[in-house]
Image 1 (cartoon, rainbow, N blue to C red):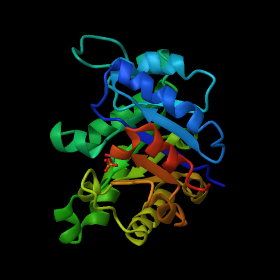
Image 2 (cartoon, rainbow, N blue to C red; image 1 turned 135 degrees about the vertical axis):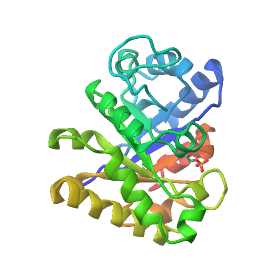
Image 3 (tube, protein in one colour; image 1 turned 90 degrees about the vertical axis):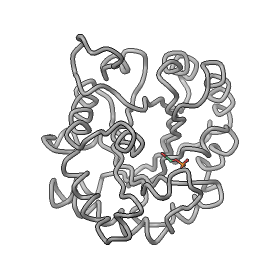
Length: 252
Ligand code: PGA
């Protein structure tokens, strides 16, 4: 059985005090959510305080990115994965489409970030997803399989249980236009097949694949009903504790 994961990506929103307020408001609302892993990803400057304030709760903290570099060094503006781990972070999101689109991140860089996250002891949520133009020209699966294979190159079998894949079609992010559960299911099943071909059927069966892109309280149930959808990476609807809690508590 794959334990679902519901992760909130706060992107570049919220000051430190807003982050702490939202995290603390969320805590009691999801305290009984044992059916899934609950993760929030605040901005870098809020990570340490949010980790400290959530200690002992069932909410884990993710960073939204990390450096490609594993070791400390002269890399102005970067934060290494081991530094995230040092302040209590347990997960890192890498390869989000906003990083690929606006910061020109390549699969090779994403792969180095995956490796850096794993080396630091973090679990990695690696995002993949096609643009609208790519979907319309029929290359969505090619794009996603290239991102998967490129991003996850060089991993050993023992790394795989700390890999989570998030399928986020770019055309569904922040647009209010969600993929239908069937469209998402089709790509998730494809991702699992690619993973099985590259690694093993056992590893593919255990892989958690999250859907992301305009997930809301009113569409989470339909998405989670799909066989290969193991959770959600939520942007806009994770910014408010009550709407994110409704998504986390989708079964009740
Ligand atoms: P959205 O963002 O839920 O606001 O569409 C999802 C994401 O970018 O992770």
